[in-house]
Length: 266
Length: 284
Image (cartoon, rainbow over the protein chains, first blue to last red):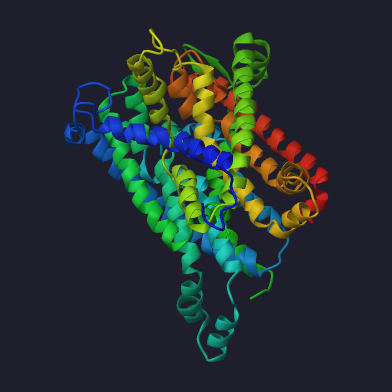
């Protein structure tokens, strides 16, 4: 191994087994998706795209995919719009209850998603909002707010304020300073927060399954319903598409932010 | 403008939606958990502890809670045993290898749990890949039963959650001064002693923080136990789901949810207190 690699053969072996453990289920999903058989099987007699073509005959998956995208865009955008002022307040002001407010915004991380689902279902049905787009967006905002806020807060806290002071002293109004100086400086954190919020919303199953209706079914919910009835190559090909899309997003994110930084929130 | 006003104005919109969409629904769920349920009349407007008493007294629920927390402990321990060494190995890799391995380990966190669980269903099913290979090679004659077992759920949940452990330990390791390790080695400590006496104590906060995340997420896991456990192997989250959407006994489902939440909060808080007391010096 290289000069800077201090691992012995035992450690390298462990690492290899660990990586196989992590990647095996995902690789298997992709392999099964390419099967040429009509049932679950590895593609032993040649690869086939028939199960990917079959997705086109199942509009319920395609509709659910687009619904998930709209839901994730709507809730991530609103969550970031709420997170930016909240982050600015926390980073720049000392006020009574500051720690408490922050803990409050982070608290959804402590609440099991199934508990949120239970609570939102009874609440939304009482309001008559169950299964509506706005209802789902409102619930998803609560769920993804901690992720958005953490990254936005990190970038606001780490921002150099002298540029703002310079703009103000040169006669820029508060609003112009915010739009032309502050926003560009915190943009990486805001984008990172948005992306993480988007992914969290897009992937969410446990809470959404309580509040989704047949007309507002997200992709994970649709997939769950399918899997509890039958596990067939079709669901493998749908999953393979998701894995592919996520991998592309992941590589882009890793290039821009570094994946470990994004997930730790530093 | 008054000086104390801006922070509250800036926090206002988020606070408002959190009160309307989090505090109110949670309080309503708490109230609902005291109502009773009648199969013909639906939810009754009375209040009492009967739902909680039912959960506390019924052995059916004891089994479900025991299974849930048993799985959570097992998953947490396995994640420590394999996740912490992996993080240490990562920290000693060359830069290129490390970023590749980190991408492979952390990447799955961004892939939906349902996809990862499906992967395990395809691997461990009776007609799954593992059985297909083992039967094909001739090691076994009848398919191994791994699907719908607690073991299957544990393995899949370790797979879903071990990245959190690696991430947590890895973050702690990055703050570590590599020269301390070199010093121990140059002063004649064996590799094993260095690991045990120098590295391990310093990464313990990372291990403990990771354990907390893994434990809390396992205890409330839904998709993986539901798909790999089937109808029979219920955990707390799937039980609450069934009460809500199949039996339609919302008050009982709400009571189960409240108990799950309180149990989680108690575990997290007491664990935090324990860790802070024990590692006060490390955190300062």
